[in-house]
Amino acid sequence: MIKVGITHGDYNGIGYEVILKMLDDPRMLELCTPVIYGSAKIAAFYRKGMELQQPQQLCQIADAADAKAGACNIVNVIGEDARIEPGQSTKEAGQAAFAALERAVADLRDGKIDALVTAPINKHNIQSELFHFPGHTEYLEASAADGSKALMILCDESVRVALVTTHLPLAKISEAITKDAVLEKLRLFDQSLVKDFGVHKPRIAVLALNPHSGDNGLIGTEEQEVIIPAIEQAQKEKIHAFGPYAADGFFGSGLFKRFDGVLAMYHDQGLAPFKAIAMDNGVNFTAGLPWVRTSPDHGTGYDIAGADKASEASMRSALYMALDVLRHRRNHAEATENPLKPQTPDKPSRGGGGGADGADRKQRSDRKPKPGKDSKETREPKENREPKEAPAQERTAETPAPAPEAPAPAAEPRTSPAETTKIADSQPAAETAKQDNPE
Image (cartoon, rainbow, N blue to C red; front, side):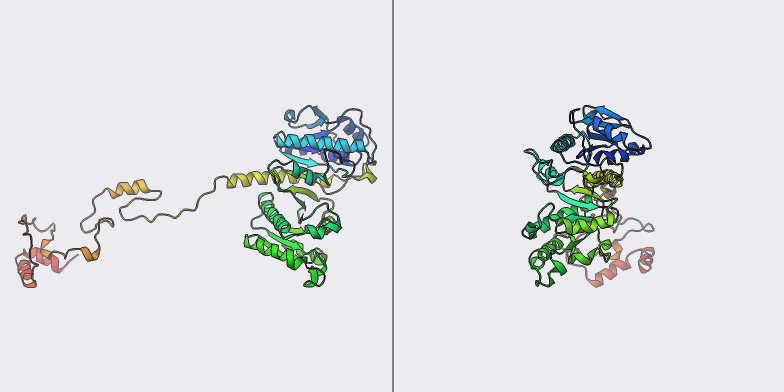
């Protein structure tokens, strides 16, 4: 059974509500073994104010390796004295969010869990000496020991949107859009669509940075100088990238439905239209890393925290996607583990051996060739063959074997046509008839 780690995020937000609502369906335990990183005390606090259909009892464990299948497991990462203030941003809640994330990533790295689903955090109160990142994506990238580069992909069943830049101020976006940056994200996106989503030869649309794609340099030159060269290089690498497309009408016209993925230049350019299309079921997936991590596409929801109003749909979709991506990766790894090398089939020669049936052909090649049916290997070139003997030298079942011939002299002159006629006349009539009417 697949083990999925779930971090509680900012416990003063809607994290516990969407987690408990998602696990209220007992069928979830048939798909995976959930391991919550948080606090059993805080979970009990929120559960009291919720109307759950089939509340699941939380099984407290000390280590994810001890998680029980068929149960909702929870690892306590903070003490019992946590102060709960729904709807409030506190430093204590930020520290608790980081404690859960740090423990879950460590277990993910050690193989104690197979995938990770993270509840929303507050990017301000989580900041500390240990966490100085603008979000989950950047922290997970830094935690990867193999130097992997992360790619943020927002997706649902109808659209996938990836970003060249993520949590970056608008004033710094233009200088961050370089040919290398766009090309790197195109490569990561293409690889992820194949490996994580099972798309064969994916088609990727690339959005422009400036309005109207820069109007041929009138409004901006990034398209001509950066984005188009990156697309052309990607095409040379057999990546099916197209564009750049003006972002304003791309989604409204439905053009996004013709592609397997869309690469946006910055955060709001891609996420604003995406959330208008898939707010309820959208998922944030971190591609490019050795682990599978997803999260709902919404924030902490302080304004409705503790009111039992939060929808668990996006959280459920995040868990489903984590399972799907994990299975896709395993299937891809299995399919490409020992690829067959290109082989040129050997052309079997008559009587020779080779190919898969080499042994059988070799056995057949040991047989003596039929009279007049020399094998290819022993047949002499036409120009090197001696002239055929006169028909009188042939032997048939109707004629007796000829007497042994006397040894030929060292330099025997060739037989003249007249002499050949004499020899033929001296043969028995039956043999002469045989030669006049060959079979």
